[in-house]
Length: 111
Image 1 (cartoon, rainbow, N blue to C red):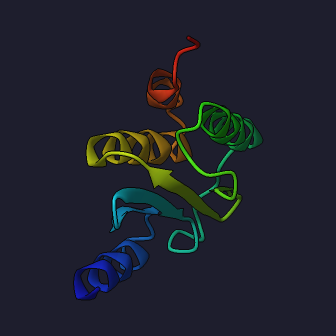
Image 2: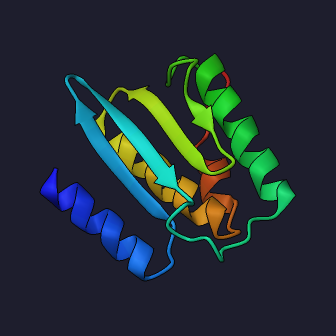
């Protein structure tokens, strides 16, 4: 918990979006917090893309339906594997800084 608090504090000091993954038993949670970056502006189109991605992940069964798609706090619950959680965290972070390509690549494909 100390490392989590230190990373959050550092993000706040740097006015940066805080992104982390957390192990919860057998599953992982991805978190992104915009409160640490109050001066950071995110375009409506980015919010729309993130919301659409969260819905797609829910429909694919990759995250729980009570996951949050912002606008200030983002949480993706019950990601099955650490590697997948890291991929989604990186994609979410990039998206919140305007790069939607990683988010698009991280989406599940239709089967």
